Image (cartoon, rainbow over all chains, first blue to last red; front, side):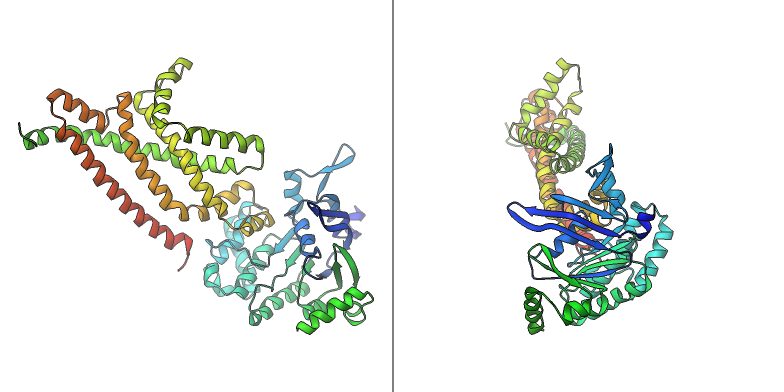
Length: 262
Length: 224
């Protein structure tokens, strides 16, 4: 399967998402290479979070196909054609994807360690000891080795978000999605979360797709930046191209508005 | 004739205490049915599949909207015509349990619907199966806040058990009735039954408050 080895890790093919009469994403085409780090920026309502939510199968798509790691995610092969995926197919392919949410969504009744072993034990069928050892490693990596027994309510927002990153990594995803992961944090806690993401980028073989308002981080960290507007990719390019010399009027307007706000 | 006969009171007390065991058994068994079946009904009612959720909702509404006494009679007198013959105690406990299961299911439903959407989404993102999601993520968070409401139904169910006397279960009320008719004195047995229910209801309410604060500490605000 050379297609699998060399092809894109994620491919959106004419993907459309509507809420009633409102078209949130309009025939989106987007390819992300293995190991590529892509940032999605844009005004609110431009459909950028929807891209992640569809990829995580939290939203159903209305049209088009999403492929992950060389196979369709939203559909499956049947009788020579593609039919909408059933729950079993979704569960198998979804395992390649991990997601970190704006509001962390940790399980509040479980300790940091328990949060990180719940899925490995129940989904990957790892022995408990092994799952715990690996979760401990991951918590060490995000700088929370001494907080394993703490509950989310005892942790700061930045610490909770780092647990959430460790929890997602414990499932060994190939693709990691970050949905405005610093937006709910106090300013002084943003850095510690971004540092963890930076380390992931350099030390792990991960394809990363993030929706962010941290323009500085997007510029420094990404291989590519996509500017969304009105459910389409209005402009994309390397960070230097997009931030340094934007071509589209809307991109310029958006960037100057964001820079003005600091 | 004395208004209150203490000698008679002492004479009937052992029989009433024995009967109170039956009442307590019926309460506990009935509530076990109500609490477990109620949770199952609540989960089925939330199903995405309309072939599951709509019949469940209809069943809940049907049971809640018909008198419990009729349901007891139905199970005891009508089921045998379809070959299902249950002893009076089992029929009564089943009827009360199922009736209160429908009330409990509404309580559970409120608890389940209060779980933030993010908890479901995180469970999906971690690829947890629906079963594991309910077992480990949703139910442990949904139940502690509804324990007081479930507790109220526990006490309410307990106070409905005298209805079982209608199908001659030898629980407290039926025993008091028999004692009264044998001795032509009703004031002592019926009063004692009332006192027993008062004491047990108060005790149960106190226990529920204890349980509530215990759950509150260990589950709702873990580690605090």
